[in-house]
Image (tube, rainbow, N blue to C red; front, side, top):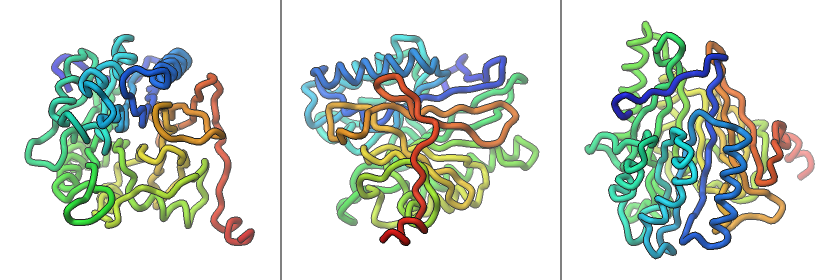
Length: 315
């Protein structure tokens, strides 16, 4: 984090994160303006302590000036002087720009907490953000990871979180645990492309929310979920990528969550309002609360239940 900046629980013991995902901002067209209005509505209602953009903030292939488009998209948050951070998706730097250039755009905003991360790792934007308690000690750690874009030339399809990133995550988890007397520090992880366990969880466990398209995960499993399980620190993960999936559930004690797609300048479904996922941490309490805030201002606390057993019976 930047020198002199810190994130703290509020005096009443809460910390609220708004997750915006898949804005697919282009050139400020009418759909982008509708996206902007949605974001303003969510920020007005939730008054978050942090905003996290989980990738595909822009769709660079269709941006006349990708850096300007990225600036315009995040300015909706930075203009309010709110702390925010971002990870990259597969469309942000696909054409006409690079992740390094887009990171520099982010860092031009004084309330941005994103970092490039270690140069030797795959991707740009592997970093941690601590949330401090009333004593000024890290109580929750946020992990940001670059889940890449495409797996070519090794495979067709999407990239994955690579071995060097997983090893970095494990080292970070160990260091925070050592500082914490050997106990894992509760953590959340933010990245764009879901890990394969999202699909497995939907097929085998009770989930809450909808799955209206396939899980766009890598075709191979690089082991990031296993690392989180072994370290015992991650309470939940938050991804985007699949615009008409918004479910969450528990998989071996880790809560895997999709955001709710935010942007209008991309594909969606008429019956699925755009919105944002909200995450509420409570100081001294395990886990987190989460809900969805929609374009019309309404809030979804209880998403529809999906039971694999019921699905099998009906099938």
